Length: 240
Image (cartoon, rainbow, N blue to C red):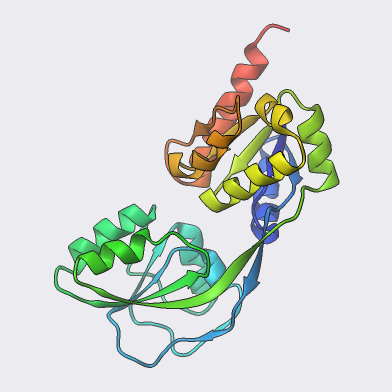
């Protein structure tokens, strides 16, 4: 089965290796390009650093590594340690999970530094401020939207009735949707299968008629691949 991967290039290449090991045929067409913004961690005092994406470490971060920090996702935790940071104090599965962990671990008003992207959902910072915490935003990267699909991806979308598209973020799904509409590939998009990391990620796909996203059981790549394997089994068991 052909699988279209729309993640930023470095992440897409890593995903492609894992897909090939499972017998799938990955096609790469990043809809986002990650651009680093050089930063220096402020010397002001804060209780912990929060990081929700490995993209925060695309460029070296100047300043002393924090004594305490929390991440969303094991991939982000690994990127932090590769950047020379210690092990995180906790690793959440989602921003919502992180909010719950911080509420439990920091029952009194605290000060956080959030290493974030320029374009982001405000759920984390809004929830923490509502609980009386202070949060300082340090923008360390931004994501630039692609202007179109790769030639291989366009051919796959136009021709495939059994291909699949993996969606990892709400923003990338939204850009994918806009690219589909501008390329006049709405009918093609309805013929392929769409697998999403979460229901939130799938939200922009509602603008594409005939698309019924499949949602991973947990917001991680392993669960997404489980759905992909199940999908392939269902398709192979269908009579011709």
